[in-house]
Structure formats: structure tokens, C-alpha cells
Length: 361
Ligand code: ASP
Image (cartoon, rainbow, N blue to C red; front, top):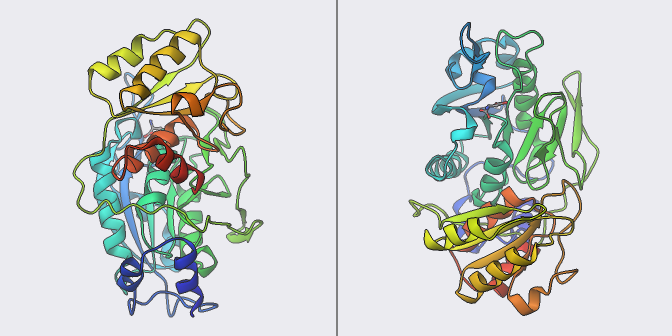
């Protein structure tokens, strides 16, 4: 059996999904992309497409079009044949599920074509990790998908966008980047979607993977993969091709003296799931615990995560998850636990089934 077919089986792709890529020019083991790699760039905005302004805030994100970003880095054309399209042009603080669903559909469509070897997505850094996680769970291909952003707008002293974009295309063009799930390239490091998070709102490097570290580094245009990618054999992959929305799921932030008020508001609004960004190992103020236990009793799925930037939220440590029917988020931070819960809720509302999905990602 060809390596990538085995990999797909290990990753839990169904045979229907697996056959979709038959004969579509997927890479075989050790095979180099024949000729020049063909990479499609999808642009969504962000500071990488931002411009300095003279009045009001210092700059505006999501202003420049994709042609301008590509033209600013002539060396890109030496690495690959690039095609491009503008999916959105927003600050990623405005990212939403309708853009996610469009992106997932478009990426799946592009990668199913024998004419595309990989996809680069330019994105704002504010919610980049959430989009990366969503696509990691909704893209069904072993071809590389790489997200990239910048923390300084074009024209700023030390703008990081051009270098990051060059690195992203370098990674996407390299066959060693296949079969690793969705990747993020920022500031000379390469990360997997599951663990990367924005760790600085102002300084560089702005991203880290607190639990697993970066997958590799880029030095002078060469990729040094330091880690093997170990994808869970039962890794979930969600077919979002027929969805036009996702179940509503909110996040409640834990703090000293926390109140149950936000939870009540979410229940009144008909939320199907609630993620708790709890304190410590995902602990909950007693009032919050009572409200979430009540929500869980009414069929709302409650996932316990933690506001602490690293470490795991495991079952039944200080909270009796078995008793309350809660799900533990494991390695996922609250914002990614929300993404996975939204997708999992498209399949089931049973907490024990949803726990299995979390455990397998
Ligand atoms: N607000 C911007 C965005 O996320 C910040 C950035 O890209 O760094 O679009």
C-alpha cells in the first residue's frame, strides 16, 4: 500500500474520502513535486495586508490586496508557480464561521485537483490559531496547507510580512511538509495547528506551541524539521461541505469571584455548547460549577479547558467530570476547544462521544 494511502488510513479518512484523491496527482513516498510546485494563495486580510494610516489608529488591517502582497516579494516567483484569490479582506478579529466554511470548501476543492500541490493562506494573527485548527479538522488532504500572518503592517519599520510569506511558500513547496496536518509559519518557526497560540500581543516572536514546541525552523530559506509529526490514528476529520452554519458555542472566562451570569445568557440564547476557560487545571468557581452542571443536565455540552497558557486539562482532577457529564479539553486551549466542540456537535450531543473526539485530536 502506498505510503500516503497508509497515512490516510492512520489518520482515519474513510475509503470514500480516500478515493476522492485517487489519480489526482498526490505525492508518493519520496517523490518530489514534479517540475515547479503549483501553489494557490488564499488571502483573508490581517496585518500582513495592513497599511499605516496617518490619523486615528496607527494602521488598518486587511487593506492591501493579494497581488500587492505577492508583488512585494519577487523571490516568491523563483520558488513556485503561484495562483491566488482574495477570499476576504478583514482584520481577523472579524473572522467568522461563514468564512471558515467557505475556506474549508475551497481548500478541499483546490487540493483535490491535480493542478494544485499546496495552499498558503494569509491571515490576521488575532484568530489565526482558530482558523488553523478549524481547517486542520475540516481539510481532507495530505497536501500542505500553511497559514501565515504578520504582526507589523506593510511599510512599518521591520515589517515581518514579506519574510513570513516567503517562508510559508518555502514550506508549502517542500514535499517534507505533506501529511503533517495544517501548519503555521511565523517568524522563522513552523508549528502544527493544534498547539500553536499567539503568546505576545506586541513583541516578536508572537507565536509559540506551549506544549509541543515548534515542528521546525527556517534558516536562510532552508527548512529544518526538528520533530516528526505524530498524528493520532483516529484523528477526526469533519465533512463541512454541506454546512451553512455551525452550532452556537460560547466561552466563559474563569476568574476570582466569577459569576454564573454569562452562562445564563448563553442558555437563554439557545447555545448548544459552552467551553469553560477555567482557572488552574480547568477549575470552576462554585457558582459557575453549579450553573454548568445545570446546563449539562439540560443537554448543553460543557467542555472544561483552562485559561493557563500551557499544560493539559484532564478529566476528574479537581472536578468530578463523570458526575456532571463534562468533557475535558486535554491540550486544547479554550478557543480551539470551542472550534472542536462546534464541529463535534454536528455529529453528536453525547458528552461521552465528544470526549472521544477530543481524546483523538
Ligand atoms: N488585528 C490584526 C488581525 O488579526 C492583527 C494581526 O494580523 O496581527 O487581523
